[in-house]
Structure formats: C-alpha cells, structure tokens
Image (cartoon, rainbow over all chains, first blue to last red; front, side):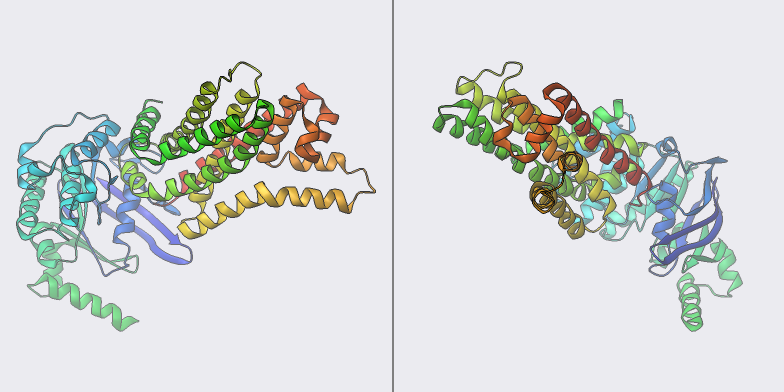
Length: 238
Length: 262
C-alpha cells in the first residue's frame, strides 16, 4: 500500500500539490488523471523521490520513504519522455541499470518480443526513434520484476502494435499482483486498464474512487465524457 | 562505496571513449613540449607553463564541469529512479568528471617532460606544476558542480561559471593591485595576504612561488607571502587553504544536490 499524507509542493511561487492525501491499493491499477499542469507527474516524481515535498509524508507498506532510497529496488518507472546516455547501446544501458540496481539482468525474451526490441539491442541510443526509446523505457520498468510499476503516459509515442502489446503486458503484471500507477490522457486506455481513478485539478483531488463509481456517480457510460465534463466544470469555476 | 566506484567506472569509460580528453591532453603535451624545446632554461619554461596552467585549468575545469552536470541531467534522473543514494551519485559524477581532466593534463604534461629528458623527481619544478594543476582541476570542478546544481537554467549557470573564473583569474589580482596602490601609505601587506587566501588561483601561484623560491618573478602577493610565512609554513598554509577550497564547494554541492528536485 502506498499512502500519501498531506503532501504539499511549491515550485517557486506556484503551488503544484495542495495538501494532497490518498492511498494507492496494492494489486490494482490506479490511474492519475487530470488536465495538463494538474500535478500528475509531480505526484509520481514525489513517490520516486525525484521531487522532495515541502510538507507531508509518503508511506510504502507503512514505512516513510522520504529519506530512504532502498525502496526504489521495488519500483519500475517509465517516464513521460525517455532519455538515456546517448552514446550507449540498448544492451549497455540495460547492463548499466542492472549494475546500479545490483540485479542480474534476466533476458526476458517475452518482453523483448512483445516490445519488438530484439533486433535493436546493439543500436546506440542516439540512433533510436522516440518510440523505440519509449519501448526501452517500458522494458526497463518491467524487467527487474518490481512490485510497484509506475508508468507516466506509457503509450504516448508508441505505434498501435507496441501500444496494444504494452497494455497486455500491463494487465499481465496486474494479474501477478503488482501495484501499478499510470497517467494518461487517453480515456479509453484508462477505461480499459484502470481499477481506480484519482482525478486531479490544480493539485487538488476532485475524485478518488473506482472507475465504476465515477461512471455511476455521473450517470454516464463513457469515461471520456465524464472527465471532459469535470474539466469543463473547472473552467466554469475560473 | 561500491556504488560510487560503479558510477565513476561508468563515467570514466564514457569520458575516455570521447575525443575531448585526447584533445585536452594533446594541448598540454604540445604546450609543455614546445616550451621545453624553445627555452634552454627549464626553470623559465616551468614558469611559463605554470602561467598557462593557472589560466587554462581553472577555465576548462569550471566550463567542462558545469556543462557536464547539465548534460548529465537525463542520466541523473534515470539513476535517481534506481535504489541509489544521492550522495553516492554526486560523488561518483564528480570524480567521473574530474579524474579524466586530471589524467588528461597529467599524461600530456608528463609525457612531454619525459621526452625532453626532464626528470619528475620529488621537489622538481614540473612535479609541482603537475600537483598544482591536479589540485586546481578538483577545486574548479567542485565549484562548477555547485554552480550547475544551484542554477537549473543552463545559460545562467554557464554565465555564472565564466564570471567566477574571470573574477578569480583576472579581476581579483586587479583588485589587489588597486588596494596596494590606493593604500600605499598604509601597512596593507597583511590585508593583501588575507585576501589572497580566498582565491584558489592565488593560492596555487603562492604555492608555486614558495616551492620555486622565485618570489620576485611572481608578483606582489607571492613576495609578501614568502616574507611573512617563510617557505614551509607558507606551503602548509596554502595547501590547507586549497583543501578547504575543494571541500567547501563539495559539501555545499552535496547539500544542494540532496534537496534538488529533478
């Protein structure tokens, strides 16, 4: 269980996360949804320790992670835009991360085939397309068998085949009991994958519950419409 | 420790694969070789070499160090998502950047010396230059790291690094000369001495002057430093101050790196 307790974060003068508290349940896929600049990536980076909150605490399995780093052994992360040292080959990147994690690289052919990376392993990062870099990033987030997987807009930039394969992989990981957090702007994807939704607007939670609850609560059958309406309500408040 | 050495190893293999380290080394090789070839007195050649070292090493170290941190941001972000503590990553990156620079300088200069039949025995001029050059590399890389971590904006950071170099390498001596000239009727030696302790380039120059015993050739601060402390105490004091100049930016850099949002 991941628990965020009264998290506050300011960048210069703009308040990005405003007294945010929620739980992420284990073994489920939780989607963090919201308009651009609502704080989705900041939440993810806070859980990863890349961003330090000004106030509040984050607990994973009842242990605070704020001044710890060992917990990241159990986390696989796929960032919004992947970036690796340019002059290394994919194989070298994987080896380097394996080395830093002190983990033996398991040559998971299933993952390589699903992400269509088998033929790319000896290519240098600087020669890769954006989509291929995303696939490497997806591979890295899954290959060390972490119990928590964090995916920041995982299918953005992927071709339809890779995108569909990645979604299948995500569902398989969930079946294994992994805790998965993802953000996405593609509502059909959220509907397809997520068990739970956290809807953010300007750093505050507007909804925290299951996808089913959200649809029933708003008497709609399409998530996209519900979310769009909620975002419009926000514009009306402004 | 294991983690630090892994990061250093990775950065070293990266640095030695690129060509800039070779160019840097070649520069010092050519400079030393030519100076030794054209100057029959190796002492004078050492003096000219020292002046090159005092200008070039701080400039290259501070610019390369700053650029290195900005260029490594992606790697830093990626590494910080792994079970790695920030202090080890910072120390690993620091030595991963400064060791190739120090090796480049050391190899270029020492090979040129050996080819010209200069022995690098203990207490020799060129050994002192090598020591001072390596010390300046570490000091200015540590200042560069601190600047690049404090300023998230690349242009600001790079601009600030150039200003720091300009102040320490050029403006500082101008200020000292101004003070000496302006207050020439007062006993300002001790004040000037104190001011020169706060500039690592001055300290390196003082160390060189005291080691060479050629204070008359190396400016005002060297001469009064020699008069005030004598050689051995002066050398110990300037080495101590240089160590402090290395440690303080590193400590502040570690602190800022620990708090920084990536």
